Length: 90
Image 1 (cartoon, one colour):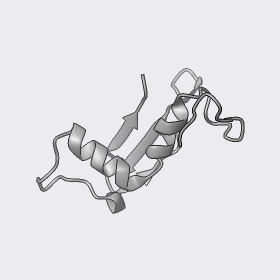
Image 2: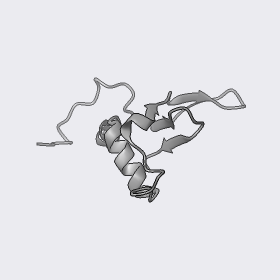
Image 3: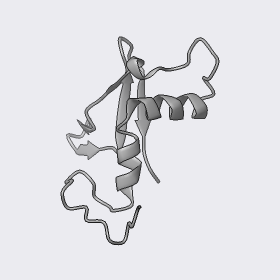
């Protein structure tokens, strides 16, 4: 049973806001991400449909050209290709 108001979040430093917890937990699962991306990008039943083994989790923190550190919610990369999926909760 989910009781978000009573949930303690301090054990995961990367979760800055309590409402991000569920979002990040679900999108840590490659199978769920593949399903989500296939639905959102309308790739289901096409030769481009993603499978969980096609995805690899990518480093969420990166440095901009101005040398600023930026952390995103979730980034996945398609294996053996320079295709990145940046997923941000708004």
